[in-house]
Image (cartoon, rainbow, N blue to C red; front, side):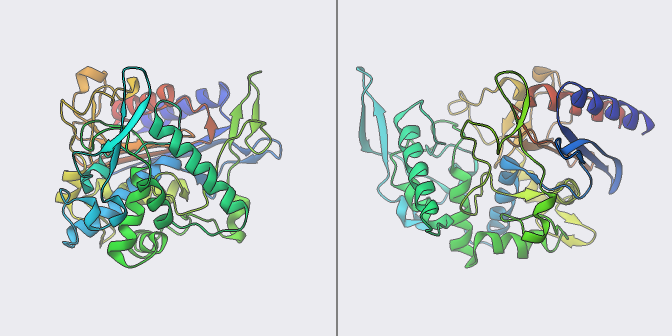
Length: 389
């Protein structure tokens, strides 16, 4: 494993020398940490180094936690993946869909299909993120902007309120017919609340974070730990790194509700405990979180030839999409030396997790920069890790 240490450290140093403020990486195999390193700064101006105490905004790596939590309820017989979502969240009854006309205008019509619970996991629900590519994205952008205004006026917003707002927006397409990255996992947070009878954050704490001793993972970082949060850096038009707090452009880095798609903060060691648990068949140090067979279900491709056209991000070539995670299906297509069945996801600021139950291997990488250079960083990390184990 000495090759792993020298090669991975050289690669991380290369990232920092080429403009990354700082980063950290941890690799675990067969229950043992075989690599852990911290480079660069959490705060450039104050010259505060990244350490094992640094807390990161993990953005979409939250999704893997959310989907794991929902699958724990699946194991308790509380729902089936093919159940209509409206049976649990009635706001999704009588769903409507936008249909684009020849002249470019949109009309609303009743949806022919119901959203199934599995459509939330697989991003095939018709729910989008805010954006400008279609009418659903534009309406979602207006709705989220309105939520921000309500929060600034002192209103408390919870995840079930968010779910009802999302349900009021016509879908971008028929449920089940396309893959489209969006707010589906935020709705899963509300789904978890309804089934568990707990707030989403409390369920995660009771069922995942406390049992795994993840003491630094939260939706809202306590006051006495906020000094440990890394700065978020944006590269401006002049190519200079500036703190997101100082940047002129609007850049949302915090959320007013327990956001199942992007809201968690965590540390390298905390998230590695979660990843190691999944790599180890659902248990860590004698604590069973989720079943091995359920992880197998999570980490196989759930898209079809018909609905996978939009799942075409270039750096995910060779991967299918499972229950909230990328899933390695075709190593030769992507030029990838990982195992078939390797899975994980990444976050908007460049954070990344790799989980490989066959090798009992997990890797977690943390950084806090946008643009995140994920298509450059993450495949190289994976190549080095698999090339040395």
